[in-house]
Amino acid sequence: MAKRLFDWVLSSLGLLALSPLLLAIALLVKLDSPGPVFFRQERVGRYGKAFRIHKFRTMRHDPVGAGPQITVGADARITRVGGFLRASKFDELAQLIDVWLGDMSLVGPRPEVPRYVAHYPADLRDKVLSVRPGITDIASIEYRDESAVLARASDPEQAYLREVLPHKLMLAARYVDRSSLALDVWLILRTIGAIVRR
Image 1 (spheres, rainbow, N blue to C red):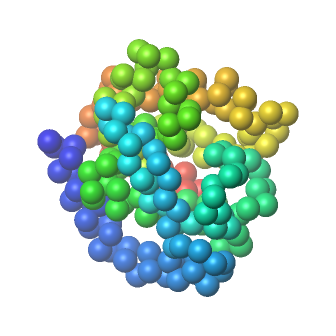
Image 2 (spheres, helix red, strand yellow):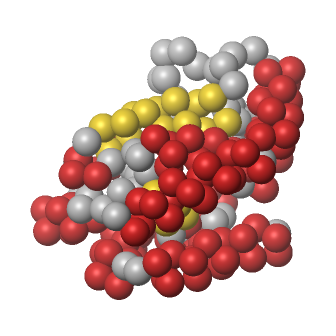
């Protein structure tokens, strides 16, 4: 309950304080390329419940959704404004909506698409999905340049499944074991620091 209250209060304050910035980002996204302001995609949340995540759209609108579900290097689908939003992580600010709604937490394992959750080992799946997914966690900090790393692989998706995802799951399980409000505050500050240093 304390974590949920912490999330709700901070997400409410964040949405209010950042509303001018969020509106400016929405306008830039809309002016830069045709399509919706938000990118909505099914992700797997707490206890395996599916929800549709909010992100500011950073790619050309693809109603069919036929492209790959991971972004590798200088993906041609990324728009001009989208490149800036990804580099600054401003595209993730829309997830404050998901935190406010209760689908996500400020800190927790990053939510994956069902396709990749299907690769979770059963014991880790139960542990990682026992908490709400978060906007940030230790894996988000360690893999903040993930697309550039995957771009160097001959088969990016296999590299993600065999190397990146298992390490992310290990870090997520470690977070669940050590979860506390103090740890959440520390990870939020580390995330802000990592963004500022870019």
